[in-house]
Amino acid sequence: TNVNNVLITLNGIKYEGITDINGESSITIPDEDLVNLFEGTYTLYADAFDHFENPAKQVGKSLIVIDRPVRLPVIEGIE
Image (cartoon, rainbow, N blue to C red; front, side, top):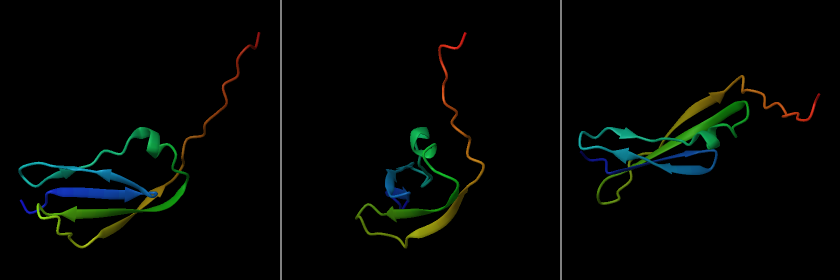
């Protein structure tokens, strides 16, 4: 495979991916980062590098967050 390292950037935070021997890459964004996204459109940028750290052309895709769950306050002590 030509791709050795994959990074994505979402909302200003970079996440590093894992590339297997077949060239398939996967990246996990932690739940705690996803729940902090408000409704709206975000651009997800992907960067790939070969084993010499030569970059490929950056790719950007839109990510739309809609109908974000409402966080309700916890009320305690009601009898």
